[in-house]
Image 1 (cartoon, rainbow, N blue to C red):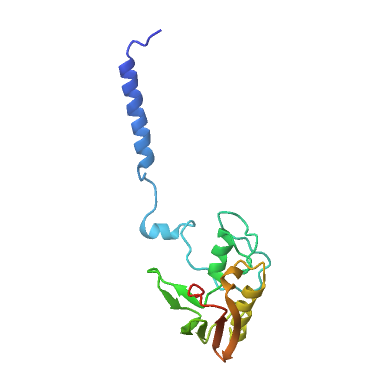
Image 2 (tube, helix red, strand yellow):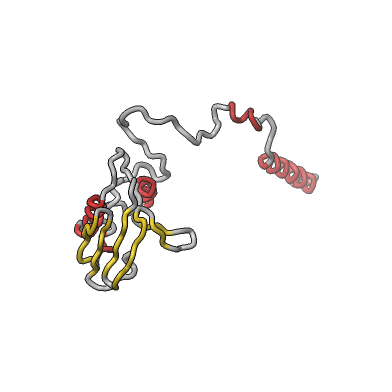
Length: 182
C-alpha cells in the first residue's frame, strides 16, 4: 500500500533530522562560564600539591594501558617511550626546526672524525635529588653500548670507547667516522 503523501513525510523526516543534528551541534544552555566554571568540581587542575611521602603504586594514564617497562634501555614502544621522555633527559636535544642543541651537555665538539667530546651541565639532579655525575653519563652510554638487549644499542655499533676525560667531560671514540652517532 502506498502512502498518500510520500513527499510530505520525506520532508517532515528531513526537517526532524536536521533539527536533531543542529541541536547536537549547538552549545546548549545551562553551562557555566567565567568564574562559575572555576568553582565547578570538574575544573581543570594544572598543578597538584607537592608530594608528602613514598608512592606505593603507580597507575599510568596512557591510552595503551600499563607500559611493559619504564626501563629506558628496554623501551621500544610508544607508551614506554612517551613515559621515559618525561622521566629521562638526553645529552643533546632536537629543536622544532630540526637543529641539535645541548641539553644535559652544555656543549659538544667533534675534534676529529672519530671523536665526540661532551661537556656536562652542572646542577642536574636525579629524582631523588642526587647529582648527575660524569660517571653516571659514562655508565649510561656504556650500558647502551654493551647490553645486547638495549633498544639503543644499534646506535653504538661504531663506538670503540666511552671515557671520563675530566670532572664534567665525556669523550666517545669511534671505530670509524659516524656523523649520525650524535
